[in-house]
Image (tube, rainbow, N blue to C red; front, side):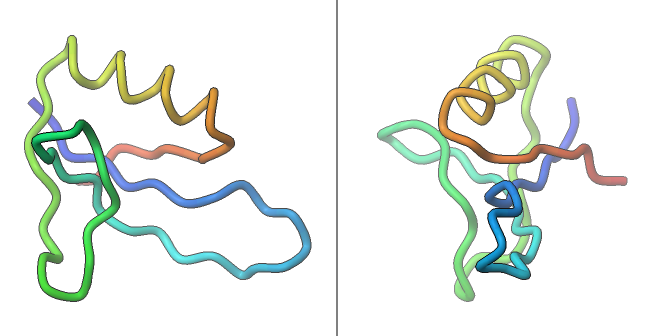
Length: 64
């Protein structure tokens, strides 16, 4: 299990900050100021998240 952070790809309007990825009833979301710790994702969820980020134009990185 691992935690991930995402941010929009650089498009010249940034800089964009990395924010933790959390699970919601509707799927994945970026954390808000009210929730700063990302959720632990298993291998299957991480693969789905990577595909979603690639499709939606986000960069993804694994946290320590």
